[in-house]
Every structure is written in C-alpha cells, then in structure tokens.
Image 1: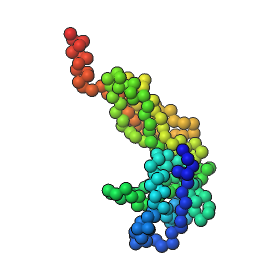
Image 2: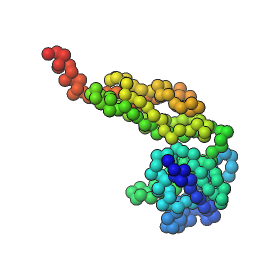
Image 3: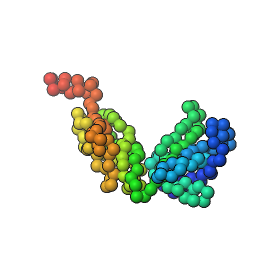
Image 4: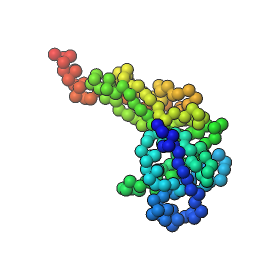
Length: 201
C-alpha cells in the first residue's frame, strides 16, 4: 500500500473551541488533537477529502502514521475517529504520538481465513470477536491478525491463547488473565437433526 495513505499534512490550530471547530468543518477541514509521549497536546486540522481517502483503507487505523506538522514529521497512531451520525463526514480525530522505544497499546482487526473449508463440512464459523487488543513496540506492529480456521471441527471454541501472534506482539487480555473466546464452530440444528435421522435409519 502506498505510503501516501499513511502520511497526512496537518495545520496547527490557533483558534480552539466548539465554534472554531464548526468553522473548520464548513471549510472542509477536520479538527484533531495529537497527544502522548509526555509532550503537550497539540490541536491540528486536516483536509477532509484526504482524511476520507485515507480512512477507506483498513491499514490507516492500525499503521504508524506520519503527520507533517509545520514541516516536521511526527510518528503517531490513530486512537479515535468521530463521524457524523448519518453523513459521510469525519468530524474529529485523535492521534497519539509514537516513541520507537516505548510499547503502544492498540486494537488490531482479525482476518479469518479458511471459512469456506469449514462451511463445506456443514458447520459455520461464529465470530465472537472482530479485533484483538495488543501491546508491542511500534516496529513490531502488524496491520491485522490472521487466523486460519480451516482445520477446526464442530464444537471447537477458539480462544486468544490459541492465536499465534507475531513476534514481539502480546495480548492485553491474556496479560490480565482473560482468555476470551475469538470464534466457535457450530453446526446448524437442522443439519444435526438430519444427521441423527440418517443414523437412526
């Protein structure tokens, strides 16, 4: 994916407050804030059309981004995005600075693969989670977590502890002792009943 998706030009905001943010949105700009690494928070704004283009890519939500602020590149990750309730409009962005020597906490989307193989057996993969919260150094941060379910049998429940995370990446929930369910393999009731009838015959 092009690095252009992960690079945004930002302008420093001088005027703050609700009225100032409303004026920015009328100018097709998105108000934002950058915080973290024990530095003072900075108020920014971005071109709305560029934000809309960038947010269409899944990697924008997990990748290390470069914010060009007054000619200075700053590494950051997206922590929150607010949208208009029914219009295709981004209304606010929250970014957190990234320090290469400090671990970051973020959520990664889960990509399930092999579901077609499961469906051929008459079973269904029920997703119990769509993302995993992880901790890692910025250099080790993947864009997503891939989970292969093709070999799983009916009745099996997949937990976080069953997922092999990339090297240097750890689960936040597991460190808390919470081995949450990620997915389970179910056979529809109708299929079970048909199988039982065939066995009886």
